[in-house]
Amino acid sequence: MSSPLNINDAFFQNSYKEVWKKLIPPGVSEIEASFIEDVAQLQNNDTVLDLMCGYGRHAIPLAKKGYAVTAIDNSEAYINEIKAIALDEDLPVEAIVSSALTVPLSHQYKAVICMGNSFAFFNRADAVHLLKKVAAHLLPDGIFIINSWMIAEIAIKHFKEREWVNVAGYKYLMYYQFFFHPHRIESEHTLLAANGTVEVINGIDYIFTLAELEAMFQEAGLTTKAVYSNPKKKPFKLGDNTVYIILGKN
Image (tube, rainbow, N blue to C red; front, side, top):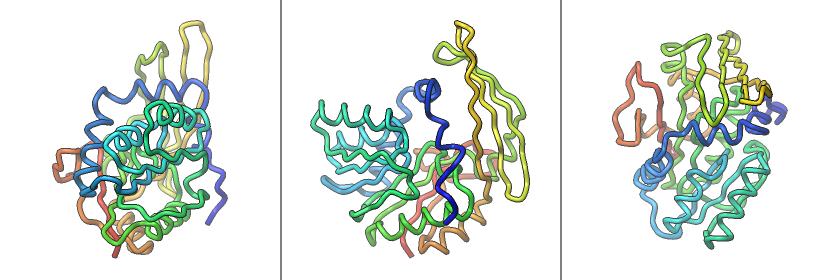
């Protein structure tokens, strides 16, 4: 495994951790939580691992449904938010501050999820390491769900060099560059606050085709069960702008 240091580790610090919440359309997280419950055929008290969980947008709804959730993120601020909600509402959530690559796991899980494009944060070596870790802690009938909008079949077709939006009181400017060897999109994100404050964040998304991902899954002892474009289980096709990959153990 390569170094756990990753440029994306700092992405959700400072202002962006609040901006990210506003970028998620209302109701999407709850719809995805129901999709996870359905695809994994979860039953009461089943165990769920939420890798790179962010502020708990899936972990909290799933815990409210009665599932025992382990939520992992390297943002202490996000994890503290989850802990506070879980304590206040008496929810079965274990929230841990850690890199997904290095976190020690002691349970077996019926469902493991990596949502919101987080899987694209890893190069091939780290991605395979994470996949092997998931496979080792997935129950025989368990399901691993990866949600992304940066696989090659999406990223290349929809690539834009520049975008901007107004969100959460900021003008949010995005600048992207596509590189090869390895295939990746390096990005610069600028947040312009109304008071003139400027915050610049850099990130990298590693780009793999579905075929390349399939080879990585097989190497880790996982196999693809389905590939959807949305939580309504519409089969994924070229031109769609998001993907939900459903994996099981070999």
